[in-house]
Image (cartoon, rainbow, N blue to C red):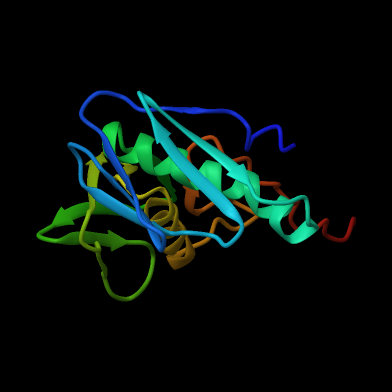
Length: 179
């Protein structure tokens, strides 16, 4: 049995879960998320908790057991608490500001980059730190990755956009010829 898959998911107050033959819908104070059912995996909602089990021990079904439990848990945490990722701008003259429905980034290019945030995602800016907030974990991670992709940190001076706490492997520059 899967170590992750057999753990029950506690349902916090204010969160409702409906299980259909095709989808699982989780609704809470922050929003509503849905996930397609995986064949061979059964989801049961009892008083205050959700249990995920599998029909057989086939390798294809076993491999999806923990995945389904984690997806449901992420939906429950997302609609009750939400998720966030933080990005940091490093570089002389690199700036970021909120502008309407997106971010205006000055990242060393000849023009300002306007990044439009998708529906359900919000951002906060404090000096050179961008905080991405939302209730869908996958979407929060994807938006953070898309912003980081605009100007990846380079290995010589460390300039660019990186996750807070990310360690950039630094390279030494040219060694030069001794005279």
